[in-house]
Length: 30
Picture 1: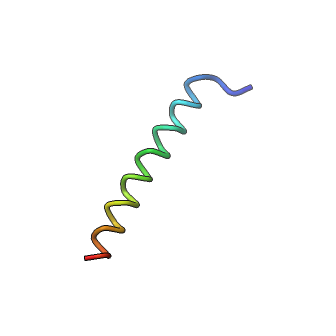
Picture 2: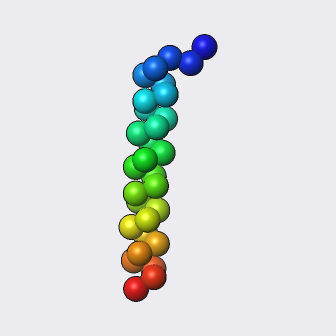
Picture 3: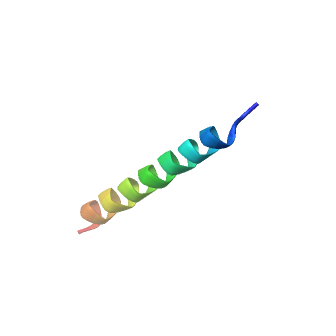
């Protein structure tokens, strides 16, 4: 069974990775 803490950690990790991917994409776009 998945606990709330695991959901929060996975959501936080996905959010951080998305922000890093956007920043990298903007740097490559320039």
